[in-house]
Image 1 (spheres, rainbow, N blue to C red):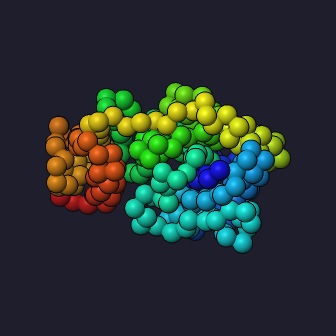
Image 2: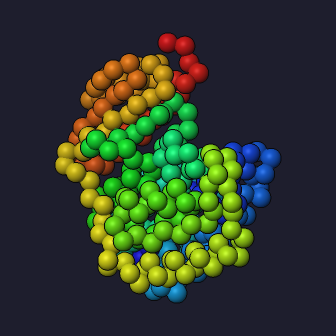
Length: 277
């Protein structure tokens, strides 16, 4: 059984603030050890659940957070930025399942730790086919494009709620309960890892109950940005339409095409946050 485990940092055990999650920040080196700890717990559970090949995709910030020498020896690591499939790079039709470890909820949830949608500046909301989505929805549809189900998500309580509303019969593992965007009640690391191991094993045993999240054809993407200059930048992408001063849309019958346009709009919009136009 072939498994891709995508590991972000905002939803990792004990992580509550950007001073921990940002490379070079005060507590970042400690946060890296927490990140690999949750990843290894999920890997151990996945092996118990029948996984025979495990690829881990580092999915946070510059995607160079996980240290290979600390990762479980049964797993391979996808590391580095600029990857065509980003947080799920390496995924194709040969995989049996995807797990999302340390994920966070979409922008605006009052209890969501460091909530945002892919970029933390310049973006207010992403919608697909008229419904707000976060990274789970964006990348869940990417997995669905290849016919692969997302069987498990871990993170805070808000992320788990979002996972359950996004993926039918998904296993959601809560490792902390958000108080606000930068505060949470955190489980002990031992308890969190116990839940991750049990959740991963159970998720693979139940994988046939989880259906891939199939993108609609056509897929319509709408971005609401924080400033008109961000929309100015995103609207320069060929095929993107300007709806109003802060909103742009793009539509495609091919989800991979829609996804790549989305990433380009993100890059341009994020780069325009502090730029005079």
